[in-house]
Image (cartoon, rainbow, N blue to C red):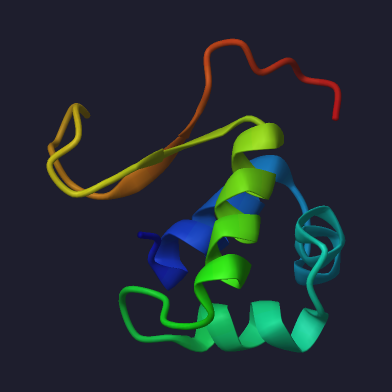
Length: 87
């Protein structure tokens, strides 16, 4: 669904910290910390994972899944084309 690297990269693209992501997703900071400490694909409560993905998408992140169209064909994140510079 999402990797810890994708979460960190998405936060970096948005210029937000773990607390801000927790607030956007309606989760606790320790939950975000545990997710980002995962090795590879984040494991956890499906509802929490869904909240993070939805929060990132609302903030303008386009998560690229394995095998999804991207220049290099790997996992990653990118800003959606409709993303504006104001947050």
